[in-house]
Amino acid sequence: MNVLSGFLDKIGGRLQSTIGVTRRRLFGANNEKLDFLMDSFYKLNPNQRTGVLAGFVAVIGVFVLGAFALYFSQVNRLKDDLSNSFAALHELQALKAAYDIENKNFEKLVEVIQRRTKQTALKPFFEKTGNDLGVTIEGLNDQKAPLPVDNPLADKMQEVRVDMRLPNISIPRLLGFLVEIEKSNRYLRVQDLMIRGRYGTKLYFDSTVKVRGYDVPN
Image 1 (tube, one colour):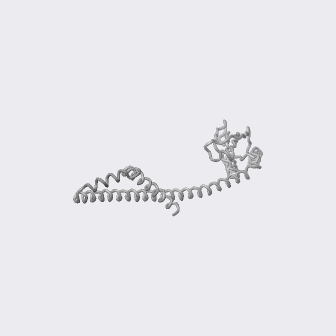
Image 2 (cartoon, one colour):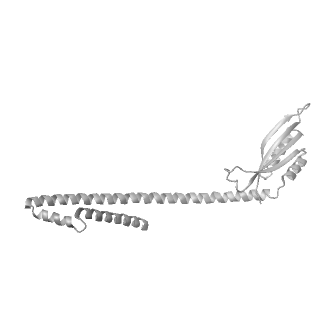
Image 3 (cartoon, helix red, strand yellow):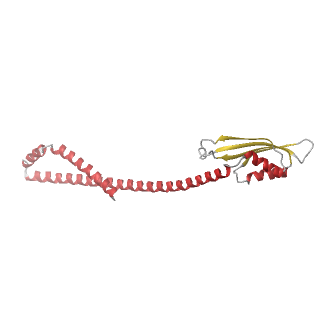
């Protein structure tokens, strides 16, 4: 209500200022035009005076009605603007609350990834997994690279890329190895897989695997 009252007072002040300017233009700064009109009015006969008074009252009535119409139209417009402003404020508050919730979830995700990856040495992990499953690993190479700048995780973590070759491996053992990687809770995912046949056998293959993961810098 205080905001609405302030708006109404502002409009009232502007209306009074406009009326003052109009009065000075009509009657002069010291009412000299009004004095001239009064002298001219008293020189008229009674019928002419009545006509002039009736016309003057009509003009004043039209002016007053116009002023009130303008005043209330401005008040209604201000009420609409105020209502729209409150609606936008409520929407902004709702969006901020939703953002705060999502930001907390994001921070929790970063914490989980950091907790699960900060003590993970990738090469020993892959070598141990390969030994446990009887998989030979060659050319194991890992490197870190920044995430794309449009990725919301870019300022929190970086990407880990691991490439390796798995020679002379059967399809069941290959699938078991890949499944073991992805279910390790280290946020590792197989991004690319290439399988080539070996000469003289249909049961074993040479495979190239590319794995992607995340790392949170200390």
